[in-house]
Amino acid sequence: MTGPVPGRVDDAVVVGGGAAGLCLAHLLARTGETVTLVDAPDGPLRPAERTWCYWEAGIGDFEEAVVASWRRLRVRGPDGEVIESEPAPLRYRMVRSAPFERLVHSRLAASPTARVLRATAHEVRDAPYGAEVRCTTADGHPLVLRGRRVFDSRPVHATPPHRTLLLQHFRGWFVRTPVPRFEPGVADLMDFRVPQPRHGLAFGYVLPLAPDHALVEYTEFSRAPLTTAAYEAALRQYTGDVLRLGPFTVESAEQGVIPMTDARFPRRTGRAVFRVGAAGGATRPATGYTFAAVQRQSRAIAAALHHGSPDVPPPHGRRALAMDAVLLRALDTGRVDGPRFFTGLFRRVPMERLLRFLDGGSTPWEEFGIGLRTPVGPMLRTAAELPFLARRAAGRSEESPR
Picture 1 (cartoon, helix red, strand yellow):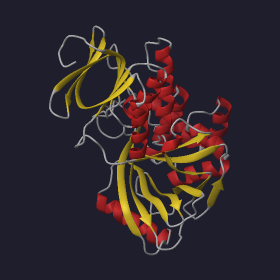
Picture 2 (cartoon, one colour):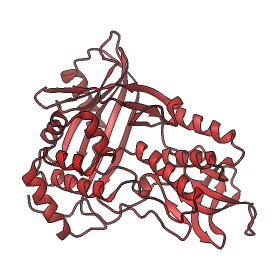
Picture 3 (tube, one colour):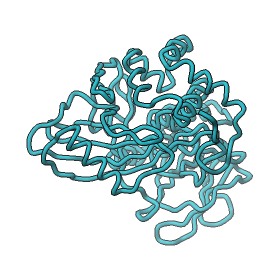
Picture 4 (cartoon, one colour):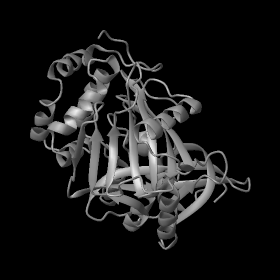
Protein backbone atom coordinates (compact mmCIF):
# COMPACT_ATOMS: atom_id res chain seq x y z
CA MET A 1 0.00 0.00 0.00
CA THR A 2 2.95 2.38 0.28
CA GLY A 3 4.16 2.05 -3.32
CA PRO A 4 2.86 3.65 -6.53
CA VAL A 5 1.32 0.41 -7.92
CA PRO A 6 -2.41 0.27 -7.11
CA GLY A 7 -3.24 -2.27 -4.45
CA ARG A 8 -6.42 -1.98 -2.46
CA VAL A 9 -8.85 0.46 -4.07
CA ASP A 10 -11.69 1.43 -1.74
CA ASP A 11 -15.06 2.57 -2.89
CA ALA A 12 -14.32 5.74 -0.92
CA VAL A 13 -11.51 7.38 1.03
CA VAL A 14 -12.69 10.02 3.51
CA VAL A 15 -10.08 12.57 4.59
CA GLY A 16 -10.60 14.23 7.98
CA GLY A 17 -12.08 12.88 11.20
CA GLY A 18 -14.32 15.78 12.16
CA ALA A 19 -18.11 15.75 12.15
CA ALA A 20 -18.42 15.58 8.35
CA GLY A 21 -15.80 12.88 7.85
CA LEU A 22 -17.14 10.73 10.68
CA CYS A 23 -20.76 11.04 9.53
CA LEU A 24 -19.90 10.17 5.95
CA ALA A 25 -17.58 7.25 6.75
CA HIS A 26 -20.20 5.77 9.07
CA LEU A 27 -23.03 6.01 6.54
CA LEU A 28 -20.93 4.69 3.66
CA ALA A 29 -19.88 1.69 5.72
CA ARG A 30 -23.48 1.08 6.72
CA THR A 31 -24.50 0.81 3.06
CA GLY A 32 -21.76 -1.77 2.45
CA GLU A 33 -19.20 0.44 0.68
CA THR A 34 -15.54 -0.19 1.40
CA VAL A 35 -14.26 2.97 3.07
CA THR A 36 -11.05 4.22 4.67
CA LEU A 37 -11.22 7.16 7.06
CA VAL A 38 -7.97 9.14 7.29
CA ASP A 39 -7.83 10.80 10.70
CA ALA A 40 -4.96 13.03 11.80
CA PRO A 41 -2.71 11.62 14.55
CA ASP A 42 -2.46 13.37 17.90
CA GLY A 43 -0.78 16.73 17.52
CA PRO A 44 -1.40 20.24 16.18
CA LEU A 45 -3.73 19.07 13.37
CA ARG A 46 -6.25 17.66 15.83
CA PRO A 47 -8.58 20.36 17.18
CA ALA A 48 -9.60 20.70 20.80
CA GLU A 49 -12.86 19.12 21.91
CA ARG A 50 -15.85 20.91 20.38
CA THR A 51 -19.57 21.16 20.97
CA TRP A 52 -22.04 20.69 18.13
CA CYS A 53 -25.74 21.49 18.45
CA TYR A 54 -28.69 20.86 16.17
CA TRP A 55 -32.43 20.21 16.26
CA GLU A 56 -34.01 16.98 15.13
CA ALA A 57 -37.30 15.10 15.38
CA GLY A 58 -37.38 11.54 16.69
CA ILE A 59 -34.32 9.38 17.26
CA GLY A 60 -31.35 10.10 15.00
CA ASP A 61 -28.38 8.04 13.87
CA PHE A 62 -26.13 9.37 16.62
CA GLU A 63 -28.49 9.56 19.60
CA GLU A 64 -25.97 7.62 21.73
CA ALA A 65 -23.57 10.57 21.46
CA VAL A 66 -26.12 13.19 22.56
CA VAL A 67 -25.03 14.47 25.96
CA ALA A 68 -28.06 16.72 26.56
CA SER A 69 -31.28 17.80 24.85
CA TRP A 70 -34.03 20.37 25.43
CA ARG A 71 -37.71 20.37 24.52
CA ARG A 72 -38.20 24.07 25.23
CA LEU A 73 -36.25 26.92 23.63
CA ARG A 74 -36.11 30.58 24.57
CA VAL A 75 -35.10 33.89 22.99
CA ARG A 76 -34.71 37.06 25.05
CA GLY A 77 -34.94 40.49 23.46
CA PRO A 78 -32.71 43.46 24.33
CA ASP A 79 -35.47 44.81 26.60
CA GLY A 80 -35.89 41.48 28.40
CA GLU A 81 -38.88 40.29 26.35
CA VAL A 82 -39.11 36.49 26.65
CA ILE A 83 -40.20 34.29 23.75
CA GLU A 84 -40.39 30.67 24.83
CA SER A 85 -41.81 27.69 23.01
CA GLU A 86 -41.76 23.92 22.67
CA PRO A 87 -41.10 23.31 18.95
CA ALA A 88 -42.35 19.70 18.98
CA PRO A 89 -41.54 17.32 17.42
CA LEU A 90 -38.11 18.97 17.24
CA ARG A 91 -35.68 18.79 20.14
CA TYR A 92 -32.47 20.76 20.50
CA ARG A 93 -29.51 18.42 21.00
CA MET A 94 -25.90 18.78 22.12
CA VAL A 95 -23.11 16.49 20.94
CA ARG A 96 -19.53 16.70 22.21
CA SER A 97 -16.85 15.78 19.69
CA ALA A 98 -14.96 13.25 21.86
CA PRO A 99 -17.95 10.98 22.65
CA PHE A 100 -19.13 11.31 19.05
CA GLU A 101 -15.74 10.23 17.74
CA ARG A 102 -15.64 7.25 20.11
CA LEU A 103 -19.12 6.16 19.01
CA VAL A 104 -18.37 6.34 15.28
CA HIS A 105 -14.95 4.72 15.63
CA SER A 106 -16.53 1.81 17.51
CA ARG A 107 -19.07 1.36 14.72
CA LEU A 108 -16.40 1.53 12.04
CA ALA A 109 -14.30 -1.01 13.94
CA ALA A 110 -17.28 -3.38 13.92
CA SER A 111 -17.82 -2.97 10.17
CA PRO A 112 -16.15 -5.48 7.83
CA THR A 113 -15.91 -2.85 5.07
CA ALA A 114 -14.39 0.07 7.03
CA ARG A 115 -11.05 1.00 8.53
CA VAL A 116 -9.61 4.05 10.31
CA LEU A 117 -6.00 5.09 9.66
CA ARG A 118 -4.11 7.69 11.69
CA ALA A 119 -2.15 9.68 9.13
CA THR A 120 -1.54 13.20 7.88
CA ALA A 121 -2.90 13.78 4.37
CA HIS A 122 -0.67 15.98 2.20
CA GLU A 123 -2.07 15.67 -1.31
CA VAL A 124 -5.32 14.53 -2.89
CA ARG A 125 -5.37 14.04 -6.67
CA ASP A 126 -7.13 12.20 -9.45
CA ALA A 127 -5.78 8.86 -10.61
CA PRO A 128 -6.73 6.37 -13.38
CA TYR A 129 -8.75 4.26 -10.94
CA GLY A 130 -10.37 7.27 -9.22
CA ALA A 131 -8.26 9.30 -6.83
CA GLU A 132 -5.43 8.89 -4.37
CA VAL A 133 -4.41 10.42 -1.06
CA ARG A 134 -0.72 10.78 -0.25
CA CYS A 135 -0.14 10.64 3.50
CA THR A 136 2.45 10.27 6.22
CA THR A 137 1.64 7.86 9.03
CA ALA A 138 2.05 8.74 12.71
CA ASP A 139 5.44 6.95 12.73
CA GLY A 140 6.70 8.92 9.72
CA HIS A 141 6.21 6.44 6.87
CA PRO A 142 4.78 7.49 3.47
CA LEU A 143 1.41 6.01 2.56
CA VAL A 144 -0.75 6.15 -0.57
CA LEU A 145 -4.47 5.43 -0.22
CA ARG A 146 -6.57 4.73 -3.27
CA GLY A 147 -10.27 5.09 -3.81
CA ARG A 148 -12.80 5.26 -6.59
CA ARG A 149 -13.80 8.53 -4.93
CA VAL A 150 -12.13 10.71 -2.31
CA PHE A 151 -14.16 12.94 0.01
CA ASP A 152 -12.05 15.68 1.58
CA SER A 153 -13.45 17.35 4.72
CA ARG A 154 -10.32 19.28 5.75
CA PRO A 155 -10.84 23.02 6.34
CA VAL A 156 -10.23 25.32 3.39
CA HIS A 157 -7.46 27.88 3.81
CA ALA A 158 -9.31 30.78 2.17
CA THR A 159 -12.93 31.70 1.64
CA PRO A 160 -13.97 31.55 -2.04
CA PRO A 161 -15.04 34.79 -3.77
CA HIS A 162 -17.95 36.35 -1.92
CA ARG A 163 -20.09 39.45 -1.65
CA THR A 164 -20.56 39.19 2.12
CA LEU A 165 -18.41 37.59 4.80
CA LEU A 166 -19.35 37.83 8.45
CA LEU A 167 -17.86 35.75 11.22
CA GLN A 168 -19.76 34.00 13.96
CA HIS A 169 -17.18 34.01 16.73
CA PHE A 170 -17.63 32.97 20.33
CA ARG A 171 -16.17 31.82 23.60
CA GLY A 172 -18.02 29.59 26.04
CA TRP A 173 -17.55 28.52 29.64
CA PHE A 174 -18.74 25.25 31.13
CA VAL A 175 -19.68 26.62 34.55
CA ARG A 176 -20.58 24.99 37.86
CA THR A 177 -22.47 26.91 40.55
CA PRO A 178 -22.63 25.98 44.27
CA VAL A 179 -26.44 26.30 44.22
CA PRO A 180 -29.03 25.70 41.46
CA ARG A 181 -29.07 28.60 38.97
CA PHE A 182 -30.28 27.05 35.70
CA GLU A 183 -33.48 25.58 34.23
CA PRO A 184 -32.43 22.22 32.78
CA GLY A 185 -35.53 21.96 30.60
CA VAL A 186 -35.01 25.23 28.69
CA ALA A 187 -32.17 26.30 26.37
CA ASP A 188 -31.55 29.98 25.66
CA LEU A 189 -30.73 30.21 21.94
CA MET A 190 -30.29 33.98 21.84
CA ASP A 191 -30.18 36.39 24.76
CA PHE A 192 -29.71 39.91 23.46
CA ARG A 193 -29.37 41.50 26.91
CA VAL A 194 -25.69 42.16 26.28
CA PRO A 195 -23.94 45.31 24.96
CA GLN A 196 -24.13 45.37 21.18
CA PRO A 197 -21.04 45.96 19.01
CA ARG A 198 -20.89 48.95 16.68
CA HIS A 199 -21.13 46.60 13.70
CA GLY A 200 -23.10 43.34 13.74
CA LEU A 201 -24.82 41.80 16.76
CA ALA A 202 -24.04 39.96 19.98
CA PHE A 203 -25.96 37.58 22.23
CA GLY A 204 -25.63 35.18 25.12
CA TYR A 205 -26.30 31.46 24.76
CA VAL A 206 -27.11 29.18 27.70
CA LEU A 207 -27.40 25.40 27.54
CA PRO A 208 -28.21 24.00 31.01
CA LEU A 209 -26.80 20.54 31.69
CA ALA A 210 -28.05 20.38 35.30
CA PRO A 211 -29.51 22.88 37.79
CA ASP A 212 -25.94 23.81 38.78
CA HIS A 213 -24.10 23.17 35.48
CA ALA A 214 -24.33 24.84 32.05
CA LEU A 215 -22.52 25.92 28.93
CA VAL A 216 -22.65 29.73 28.81
CA GLU A 217 -21.39 31.42 25.65
CA TYR A 218 -20.88 34.95 24.37
CA THR A 219 -21.34 35.11 20.58
CA GLU A 220 -20.95 37.85 17.98
CA PHE A 221 -21.85 38.08 14.31
CA SER A 222 -19.37 40.66 13.01
CA ARG A 223 -16.44 41.14 10.65
CA ALA A 224 -13.55 40.30 12.97
CA PRO A 225 -13.03 38.09 16.04
CA LEU A 226 -12.14 39.44 19.47
CA THR A 227 -9.16 38.74 21.68
CA THR A 228 -9.56 36.05 24.31
CA ALA A 229 -9.39 38.77 26.97
CA ALA A 230 -12.33 40.59 25.33
CA TYR A 231 -14.43 37.41 25.24
CA GLU A 232 -13.61 36.79 28.90
CA ALA A 233 -14.70 40.32 29.82
CA ALA A 234 -17.95 39.87 27.90
CA LEU A 235 -18.61 36.55 29.63
CA ARG A 236 -17.95 38.07 33.04
CA GLN A 237 -20.41 40.84 32.26
CA TYR A 238 -23.05 38.40 31.00
CA THR A 239 -22.76 35.89 33.84
CA GLY A 240 -22.53 38.62 36.48
CA ASP A 241 -24.72 41.53 35.40
CA VAL A 242 -27.28 39.71 33.26
CA LEU A 243 -27.58 36.13 34.55
CA ARG A 244 -26.56 37.10 38.11
CA LEU A 245 -25.10 33.67 38.71
CA GLY A 246 -23.16 34.66 41.79
CA PRO A 247 -20.03 32.59 42.49
CA PHE A 248 -19.21 29.81 40.04
CA THR A 249 -16.33 27.72 38.77
CA VAL A 250 -15.26 27.57 35.12
CA GLU A 251 -14.55 23.88 34.49
CA SER A 252 -13.49 24.28 30.84
CA ALA A 253 -13.75 26.69 27.95
CA GLU A 254 -14.14 26.55 24.19
CA GLN A 255 -13.67 29.18 21.51
CA GLY A 256 -14.27 29.25 17.79
CA VAL A 257 -14.87 31.17 14.57
CA ILE A 258 -17.40 30.15 11.90
CA PRO A 259 -17.53 31.96 8.53
CA MET A 260 -21.01 33.13 7.50
CA THR A 261 -20.81 33.94 3.82
CA ASP A 262 -22.54 33.84 0.45
CA ALA A 263 -19.38 32.37 -1.12
CA ARG A 264 -19.90 29.40 -3.42
CA PHE A 265 -17.89 26.50 -2.06
CA PRO A 266 -16.94 24.05 -4.82
CA ARG A 267 -18.12 20.54 -4.06
CA ARG A 268 -15.90 18.97 -6.70
CA THR A 269 -12.17 19.65 -7.01
CA GLY A 270 -11.24 16.78 -9.36
CA ARG A 271 -12.79 14.10 -11.50
CA ALA A 272 -13.16 11.88 -8.44
CA VAL A 273 -12.34 14.33 -5.61
CA PHE A 274 -15.12 15.99 -3.64
CA ARG A 275 -15.32 18.49 -0.77
CA VAL A 276 -17.74 17.75 2.09
CA GLY A 277 -18.72 19.38 5.36
CA ALA A 278 -17.95 23.04 5.98
CA ALA A 279 -15.30 22.86 3.24
CA GLY A 280 -18.08 21.92 0.81
CA GLY A 281 -20.51 24.59 1.95
CA ALA A 282 -22.43 22.66 4.61
CA THR A 283 -22.43 25.54 7.10
CA ARG A 284 -25.78 27.35 6.86
CA PRO A 285 -24.72 30.90 5.93
CA ALA A 286 -27.30 32.76 8.02
CA THR A 287 -26.93 30.74 11.23
CA GLY A 288 -23.54 29.00 11.31
CA TYR A 289 -25.16 25.64 12.09
CA THR A 290 -23.42 22.72 10.37
CA PHE A 291 -23.95 19.41 12.19
CA ALA A 292 -27.47 18.68 10.88
CA ALA A 293 -26.44 19.65 7.35
CA VAL A 294 -23.46 17.26 7.30
CA GLN A 295 -25.78 14.45 8.37
CA ARG A 296 -28.19 15.23 5.53
CA GLN A 297 -25.33 15.60 3.06
CA SER A 298 -23.78 12.30 4.20
CA ARG A 299 -27.08 10.46 3.76
CA ALA A 300 -27.48 11.97 0.29
CA ILE A 301 -23.91 11.04 -0.71
CA ALA A 302 -24.33 7.47 0.55
CA ALA A 303 -27.55 7.11 -1.43
CA ALA A 304 -26.00 8.67 -4.55
CA LEU A 305 -22.95 6.42 -4.34
CA HIS A 306 -25.14 3.35 -3.84
CA HIS A 307 -27.07 4.21 -7.01
CA GLY A 308 -23.98 5.06 -9.05
CA SER A 309 -24.40 8.84 -9.20
CA PRO A 310 -21.16 10.62 -10.15
CA ASP A 311 -21.74 13.80 -8.13
CA VAL A 312 -22.18 15.06 -4.56
CA PRO A 313 -25.59 16.58 -3.78
CA PRO A 314 -25.51 20.17 -2.44
CA PRO A 315 -25.93 20.54 1.34
CA HIS A 316 -28.40 23.46 0.93
CA GLY A 317 -30.95 24.35 -1.73
CA ARG A 318 -30.60 27.37 -3.99
CA ARG A 319 -33.63 29.08 -2.50
CA ALA A 320 -32.27 28.84 1.03
CA LEU A 321 -28.88 30.16 -0.04
CA ALA A 322 -30.47 33.09 -1.88
CA MET A 323 -32.48 34.08 1.20
CA ASP A 324 -29.41 33.73 3.41
CA ALA A 325 -27.41 35.98 1.08
CA VAL A 326 -30.04 38.71 1.46
CA LEU A 327 -30.09 38.40 5.26
CA LEU A 328 -26.29 38.44 5.57
CA ARG A 329 -26.05 41.55 3.39
CA ALA A 330 -28.84 43.29 5.32
CA LEU A 331 -27.09 42.56 8.63
CA ASP A 332 -23.66 43.53 7.31
CA THR A 333 -24.84 46.88 5.95
CA GLY A 334 -26.78 47.67 9.11
CA ARG A 335 -30.05 47.99 7.19
CA VAL A 336 -31.66 45.70 9.72
CA ASP A 337 -31.04 45.76 13.44
CA GLY A 338 -29.90 42.23 14.32
CA PRO A 339 -31.39 41.85 17.83
CA ARG A 340 -34.73 43.37 16.77
CA PHE A 341 -34.76 41.29 13.59
CA PHE A 342 -34.27 37.92 15.28
CA THR A 343 -36.46 38.73 18.28
CA GLY A 344 -39.27 39.81 15.96
CA LEU A 345 -38.90 36.71 13.81
CA PHE A 346 -39.17 34.37 16.79
CA ARG A 347 -42.12 36.38 18.13
CA ARG A 348 -44.10 36.33 14.88
CA VAL A 349 -43.32 32.88 13.48
CA PRO A 350 -44.14 29.58 15.24
CA MET A 351 -40.80 28.25 16.50
CA GLU A 352 -41.14 24.80 14.94
CA ARG A 353 -41.76 26.38 11.53
CA LEU A 354 -38.88 28.82 11.95
CA LEU A 355 -36.44 26.07 12.93
CA ARG A 356 -37.48 23.99 9.92
CA PHE A 357 -36.88 27.07 7.77
CA LEU A 358 -33.42 27.55 9.28
CA ASP A 359 -32.72 23.88 8.56
CA GLY A 360 -33.89 24.07 4.94
CA GLY A 361 -37.04 22.02 5.53
CA SER A 362 -39.76 24.63 4.93
CA THR A 363 -42.09 24.94 1.94
CA PRO A 364 -42.04 27.92 -0.48
CA TRP A 365 -45.38 29.10 0.95
CA GLU A 366 -44.01 28.97 4.51
CA GLU A 367 -40.92 30.88 3.39
CA PHE A 368 -43.09 33.55 1.77
CA GLY A 369 -44.98 33.96 5.04
CA ILE A 370 -41.75 34.21 7.01
CA GLY A 371 -40.45 36.82 4.57
CA LEU A 372 -43.51 38.99 5.20
CA ARG A 373 -42.60 39.02 8.90
CA THR A 374 -39.19 40.58 8.27
CA PRO A 375 -38.46 44.28 7.57
CA VAL A 376 -39.73 44.07 3.98
CA GLY A 377 -38.34 47.38 2.69
CA PRO A 378 -34.70 46.88 3.73
CA MET A 379 -34.79 43.23 2.64
CA LEU A 380 -36.19 44.07 -0.81
CA ARG A 381 -33.61 46.85 -1.26
CA THR A 382 -30.86 44.42 -0.35
CA ALA A 383 -32.21 41.72 -2.68
CA ALA A 384 -32.27 44.23 -5.54
CA GLU A 385 -28.68 45.26 -4.84
CA LEU A 386 -27.08 41.82 -4.66
CA PRO A 387 -26.94 40.98 -8.40
CA PHE A 388 -24.86 44.10 -9.02
CA LEU A 389 -22.24 43.42 -6.34
CA ALA A 390 -18.96 41.80 -7.34
CA ARG A 391 -17.69 38.70 -5.60
CA ARG A 392 -14.30 39.41 -4.06
CA ALA A 393 -11.60 36.85 -3.45
CA ALA A 394 -10.15 38.69 -0.45
CA GLY A 395 -11.30 40.92 2.37
CA ARG A 396 -14.50 40.82 4.34
CA SER A 397 -17.44 42.12 2.33
CA GLU A 398 -18.14 44.03 -0.84
CA GLU A 399 -18.82 47.59 0.30
CA SER A 400 -22.25 48.97 -0.39
CA PRO A 401 -24.22 52.04 0.70
CA ARG A 402 -26.65 51.72 3.57
